Image (spheres, rainbow, N blue to C red):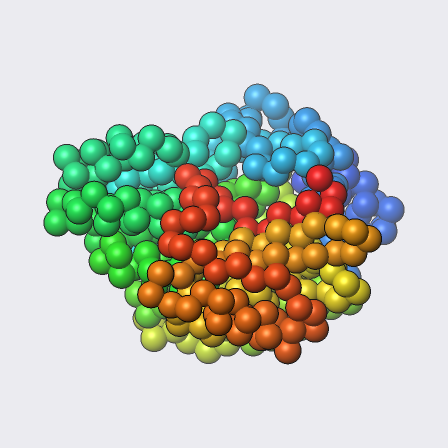
Length: 411
């Protein structure tokens, strides 16, 4: 997906604003002698921006407009280092709401729906983003926020919620609670809009089956408005993203060069119309690919595949590099296993050890399963983990995001 003339014009407008603001990226452009770009090649030579750049700008060094124009700030949910503070103008908030409204519409959600919103509110972008789009759509917002599962289920039944917005972890927890309490016939959910964490096909099928709903992947990140910059449609052949608001590239994480459409790499995003804190060529570290061709739905909005992981979540153990998603892919080969797993890495007696905990029902031979999984990991990745198959419900459930990899070597 090459950048087009209109998008280049929008980039040049942002370059002018960044230079005038003299923030980190404006200074970077000055050092490079760049005041505008005329071609695709010139755009691709623009420097990247990174999360550390945004941390270094703490607290309000990203602003490219007068402070009086800022109506809201949000912050990334990261737990390490300084937080990233993103300022929004009234237009930014409105644009974000329009994108989110579009997401709901692509999921077939209408003003007649009752949307129960469980992600967190406050500095995090999730809850208020889901609500902003809901109100733009004209649907009924039920702004629950996270946790208090008892109250969530009560509201879900009494208000006859038709849409649940949640992390995949909390959607699974709710599905299990509904099953445990035998109240599925009192639940009126039809659709789920799920975001904030990567989730596999096995988990998707469990949630969809246990709640009896259609599921939609929503994409976004605080640095780029928040959730709502992309979603899959009913044909579920990738997520449409809104190229009238953002320009999206896929690069090779090692070389920084664009890869051909259809090849996997790291998502890089440029905000085309953002006022409060525009970003050019921001490296998200999310891994996906541009899906070429037209979607069966007929939409002209381009598509990316569901997020497969992050380029910066690689783990090294016993001299072998691997990504957590590789373990998930192996576990998915065993129909006897549930969607829930946990990886714990520790350093004992002078050597690294990896333990994999994965759930299964008690109707299977756990010892045999453990050996089969360990052998599969050894065959595919190159080392033998300790595998523990445990009863369904043994692993912790989360009301937010599930921490699946715990590296105790650096605790």
